[in-house]
Length: 298
Image (cartoon, rainbow, N blue to C red; front, side, top):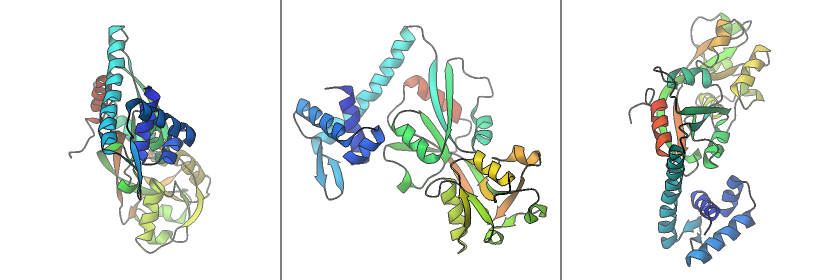
């Protein structure tokens, strides 16, 4: 059997669909099916069966895939051992950060006692949906974003709550509401052109819920996939926006944007997402070192 055959089978098990597994792996469905069949031929029994709910592992398939996932984790650890024995002491940890969170998150997670000498940190900023895809496809080790409802989190991902943030209104400094010294009522924004983030997941979904709870349909002027673009559009007078508090502090202090709290307040939880498949032991220790100071109690 080949390692890629095991990877493909695990993807099918996580997605409960050959089609979705193929999309996640960025290969054709026929290639996934062929390699899974070759694996089944090699081990001598079927891994999956079709049911009214889609694809499900057989009893023996479930046991095999459970052990396969453990073996994949062991292989990652073995790679870590090989690096140590060869004298390579640097571990690369790839971190995905939700749009707009970097100025809030990085001061909280970067170690106050100095950056670990054995850590090479790669940071990618991306929308929540892309972070989920990258974790699934093993392009990033850890993703941090606003909490997503359980029904929208892909199977195979685990989450750790970190801290809470409020949402805040940003607008051009010349906006009529910018003179207010108190929190802005969401009801006052019913006719304001608003710039939204991804609507079905992430900040866009949160903002939509804030309006919907008041029976208001927001007047969406534009949709952008990252907070940096949203801030530039607000500065240009395209519209207003509601983003995590702290994401525009620099622009607010510089007078480029007016920032105000909103009512009713809507706290969001910032969450670390990762694959349930274990990282190498060294990476696990590095993740704990980064998240330990900001992780909330379970």
